[in-house]
Image 1 (tube, rainbow over the protein chains, first blue to last red):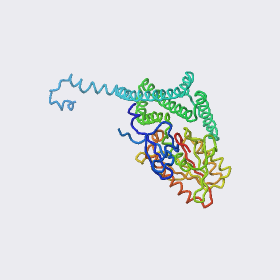
Image 2: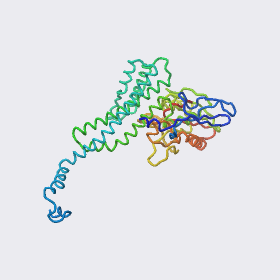
Image 3: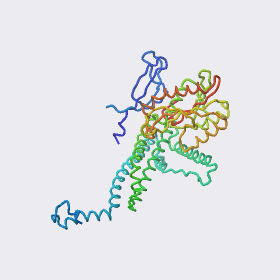
Image 4: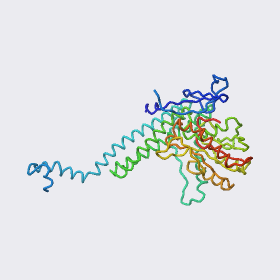
Amino acid sequence: MEELERRENIVSIEECPRCGLKNKRKFQQGDYVLKQSGKCPKCNTPMYIKLIYAEPFKP
Amino acid sequence: MALLWLPFGDNQFPPILQLVIIWIPFIILIVYGQKIQAWTILGEVSRYLNKLKMFRDKARVTMLNYVQKKGTTAEGRARFEELIEFVTILPVDLDPVGIVKKLDHVLTTQDIQLKEEVARLLPRDSTEIERSCALNMVEVAAALNSIYKVVRHFYILGKKSSNVYILAQLQMILPTLLREAEALVSAMKALEEGQPLGDGVGPLVVSHLMKDVKKVKIARETVMAELEYKGRKLALIKAEGPQGSVGKVDEALINLLNGHYSDASTIIMIDAALKLEGEKTGEVAEGIGAAIGGLGVEKFKIEEIAHKYGIPLYAVIIKESIIEAISIMKKEIAESVDEVKEAVLRIVENKVPYGGKAIIIGVGNTLGISQ
């Protein structure tokens, strides 16, 4: 059962609507697609979560 | 008889050994062969059944822990356990005329009843997302409970009657059932944390299209937005997120067509579709027809209204397995979004004249996907 839960990494992909910069981070409780997240480190524009998905688990 | 002596040479094999090694096993296999086969299958089915029980219990416990964490009372917890056994009796189909309306009525009643019950059992200050997550978890726990009980029923039936044919059928479908049960259990985690499911790819595409425009509610748990694209007017429809819901996209379409969009040139539906073994997950395909799953009520209504107004139905589907559809969205599915968007806009450019209108519907569960 434990194995079942650890097979995947859940990630949130943030994107800057202005410069298009993308940032991949671990999914955090409360994340959802189109939620505003942090500010873009390049142009300081608020970023949004573009995608949330599971990718194969890498220890 | 001479043949039986052959491997051992002339008169070198005592008759008693011949009886023990050859004849007794032969007779046992003839008389008890089916029973032995039944015992072997029973052992295997029993192992599968234990796993299914483990999955069912895990889902039940996850659901109960979730509602307890959200502040439900001890009575509420007990009622949630009862909801796992909730049954829906489908209408009689002896006279199929008008069955879709009856089915729609039964399913809508079930939907409303479960939603109201979950809302009543959770604290008043619980959010819409929490309620929808609890509801989806009840549905998953109920599905696992039902799978377990049906398998157990046939297992006991086969055991009682030593009927090898019942057990063999069970043995054949169990690996697939187990994979589905496994996917359902892993979906519990996604539901608990509000993560998008593979089935949510349709609403995901539409959410990206309607990101920067004003949204209005058009039907129960369903939103729409209007977008100008290269001189065409697009009405975008999806279930209201980020709570877990499939919305009422059929009613939304009916409202639009009976209103300002009766002159629409095309309806484009985006949905996850079951892939065949060997097909790649996340593959995008275009086609004709109403791309929507379920028991067929929504599909029927959409086809009927499209036919009434003479509007062609186009479909853009994203291939995935049933297991991927009910699990957390996979990378390949999520990354197909841009390709789907391109396909949809290409259909708009090719099929909708300049100044014309199109309706685009994202079908699926919008859990973890806002608009």
